[in-house]
Image (cartoon, rainbow over all chains, first blue to last red; front, side):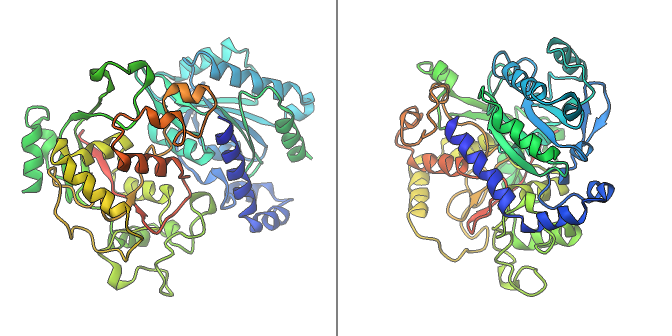
Length: 203
Length: 255
């Protein structure tokens, strides 16, 4: 887990460093949010156009997260241990923000499990974890959409016998343009790195 | 002829509808094989260590520069001048060196390399295909256990020589399934290259140096150093990586 976490950090650093153009672009579009949203920068995950379905049955694309920073994790609802902990840690990140700040952040959970995690299952999961804020989105997509997002976020996973998933537990933070700015092991109780990254993006 | 031989294996398992030939693809019959890593909870039970594979279509040969060029012509987003940073490192199609950013005529029948996983996946999707899973790819390589000794020798001979000028695809004989160039030409992307291939105990201990430590002791065939090389190579990849010897082929479900 630790080495992988380092690797993911490295990946995010690489992504951040390999894009000297981004900084300029960001400055350039600073006062034109709509322009940024319609043409994501070339290192943005919003370039992935797979269709997802949210817990309330609505179609969803990664680009819909644009305009606000987003805390992202991949989970599945029949997961007993790692995923509930991941959600708890994301909620701790949410609570570490002021109400005004939290309203300016998206929290997104994408399911590994296209077979079992129907929108109804996701709704049930949200209820179980007292997720009621409109800032949260839970979504499920096709096997290939899940794989593509996982590859993009550097999340390793494999479906194992019995329908469960072996997977990395990673929290990623995207900026409002969908560029990965921070990644951390979701099992890590210390959420300071994540909240600092978020607060920087909110300034 | 090659497709026919593939069908003979699977006649009992696959319906007639599945057997409608797909151009340049071979029907790989259903079967099972033993993946490189054993699951700890299955250890000791030899039947539980095998993985079942459903029948599927697989490209007979790796995708060539010619075919990838046709794809890029139709989908300019994947031209080397337009490639998005999130989808590839800076070496995308590096060997396409003429000013238009297109493939060299002399290379058209060679396998395309310097392509990221995203580019490979996009190519396959555009043909209404997909990348093969790692299990499907490895299963095809086992070739229904035909002449394993010779196969391992061939693979190790290839792994042990330094990078050479790539030959065209299909210059060596196909395997028993009718599949060319699985070994001896290039490394290939699989859909789930970013799968966990480690036994659960080594993960829980937080030890990620699997290939130097306890993980490799769980290999189902300790002599299969070639498989060890492939799994550790895949383990080292990221979706945006490209390589001078890294290409791909596509697969397709039977239904």
